[in-house]
Length: 53
Picture 1: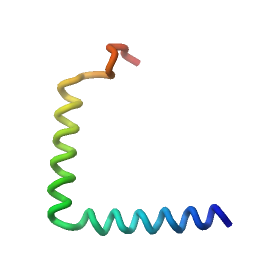
Picture 2: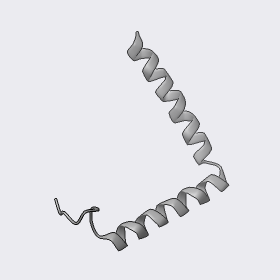
Picture 3: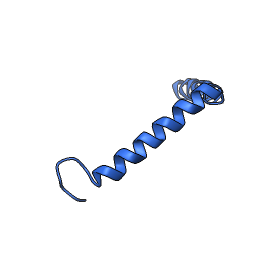
């Protein structure tokens, strides 16, 4: 029973996220976040602490 409730809540949250992501002003925020994240990854080149895995 708890698993079914958990899945129901998760699907409701996912539906709301998708609904919000379709709005133009949120799309701009998402694109900016992705661009900033990619730039950050490109500059750093690895994990903090200098250890490569």
